[in-house]
Image (cartoon, rainbow, N blue to C red; front, side):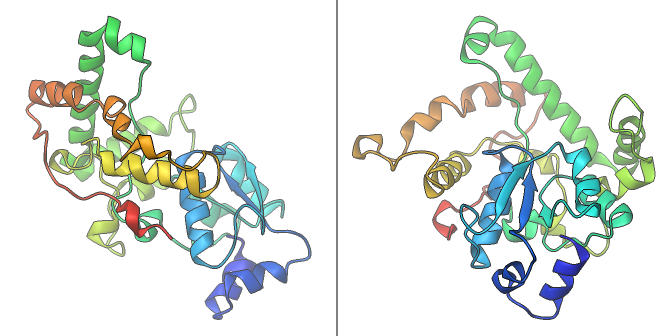
Length: 258
């Protein structure tokens, strides 16, 4: 958030009151209208008594543009993955108000997805891609040095193009961040396992914000999600690279949504 808005919250002022005191309607940015960052943002606002569909103006911006838009006063806040929060704090006098991992512990972020016909016509390639992602995630979690190396690669102009030190801040676990809030890429396979519970949470949010109609009685427990979360393909890929395919049970609890 902007430093002025964050300061109002730090003084104990409810977010809804602070937003009403702004000279114009509050503007918050996310990365895609129905994407995960929109869902994290809208859920957090709703918990503060702010209706994200009525009380603010939500806009979509590429994350690299968000810090400057905040500095220019075009935004009052945004939700995006690192390194853009860190970049905004350093360059746009912004203040991080809430980590998504604190608001929604165990939340997933980023998926490997493909078209149904691709998976059906080229199952070996789909499995190989999944195995490659698993190996990459395992490598990232294996050591701090590996994450620092990844930051160096991402700092290249053809990639993210920010200083490696700034990228490292978002990748390397920090002493002031609780272990259960730290960014995990693998966690022994627990971070990679596709979970139907997460799919149900996403659907619940889509219905919550009226992007989908209420579930029909014949939908049951959204059993069709099992055809989207292809656990059979995942288990085959996990076996190929010797990853425990059922590691960990942590997932967001859809019933906990406000």
